Structure formats: C-alpha cells, structure tokens
Length: 273
Image (cartoon, rainbow, N blue to C red; front, side, top):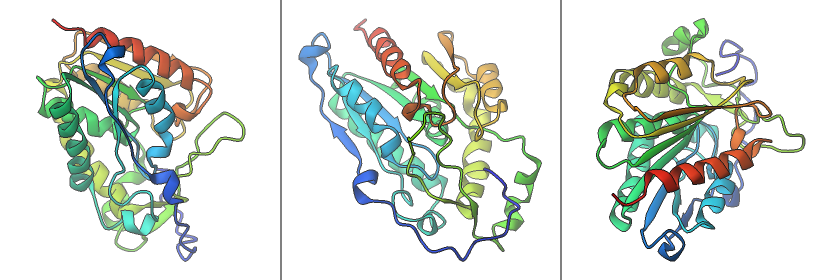
C-alpha cells in the first residue's frame, strides 16, 4: 500500500472499470494436448486489480491444453468503493469456489497467484495440501514492513481511500487497469484477516512451489519472500528473479518467461504417478 497517510483526494469521482476488462476467464481442459490427463490451473489476480492482469497468462496455458479459471474477486472490477464493502473471507470464498470447480472437472490442479492472489492460493494450499499439485507465485504478498500500516485500524474509520497501487509496470505503454484508489477497510481486512493467520499456516504447505520475484517491486517489500521461503514445507522450491519487470510482472517485460516456465513446471508436477 503506497502513501496510506495521504488524506487528500477522497472526494475524487468514481472511475468504474470497463466490464470487459474485469470479465473472468474460464476455459475447459483439452486432454489430447496434455497426455490424456485433465489438468486445471487457477490464476488469481491481486488486490484492486482484475482478471485483466492474468488473462494473457491464462490464455497461454489454455493453448497448451490446460483448463483455466481466472475468477473476479468480489469488490473488484467495479469501483474502489465496492471493494470497501467486502474483505478477505469474501475473496477466499471466491477463490475456493474456482478451485472446487477445477478439482471436480480435472485430474490435477495447480494454483497460481499475483500479489494478494498469491496469498489466497497459498491459503488454499495450506487448507488442501493433498489436493494442490503445485503452486506458482508472482510477487506474492503476505506481509508489509511499512510502519504506517500500523495506523490502518484507526485510519480506515476516517479516511476511506488513498492513492492507488496499480500500474507498477516497467514496460512502456502498458497499464494494469486497476483501481486508482486503495480502499482502506479492504486493505485492513487483507492484512489482518488474511495475511496474519496465513503466516502461521505456511508450514502446512508441502506442494512444489515456483516463485517469481521482481528485483524492483514498488508494491510488495522483500519481507514476503523471506517469510514464504523460511516457513513453507515444500521441498521442491524454486525461485526465479525477474530483472526487467516491476510488480505486475504478468503484464511486463518478463511475462513470456513466466508463461513458459510456469507451463514447464505445471507439466512436471502433474505427471501421473
């Protein structure tokens, strides 16, 4: 969360997100391309973002025959005011619903997430260790070391939003098309109801894990990577540093690297025993 103590501009007009930008993506498996097995992949977008940031990745995987679900989180894809009416439990319920659909329709499921989407799928992996074949994370968020975050429980009651965190992208001319404001009630729910309990459950995670981390990330600080690395129980743990992308790496210069290497990882971890 950037500059949460800036109290200016809360009277700014609502800027609704284009419905086409926020539309979820759902593609069935093509087992003829994946050795006869049906393999599902869940891709979860981040806080104040939308499926737009994940669709290119999803389409790249669908072309390889994977079933793909890119759900829209409640309170997202409309306006930041709507986001302040929901919280972590709503987002986790939506993520869980997409995961359940993939489990029902496929032989194996891999879960992937960007930023807060990473914390949501990590929680899935902690809650369903026998049902997650693998995890792919891109700049996942499970913590913040910013001192001003401590003010959120009070600040959210007097200031509804602050300047947004969207569009941390190095590639010229590319935008995430997320919210221009950060809703503080929603941000507090993410950190207090989501991240805090999740950190205690990370040791439950045993699935193979591939983590992409941008060397320059102006949204998520390095503490999240350190916490994940130090606490998950995954013996198969791979880190890849992205030198040409900022936070929204799925739309940035290293996007093709993410698409290719995640596809190879998914193929490896979903091979029939």
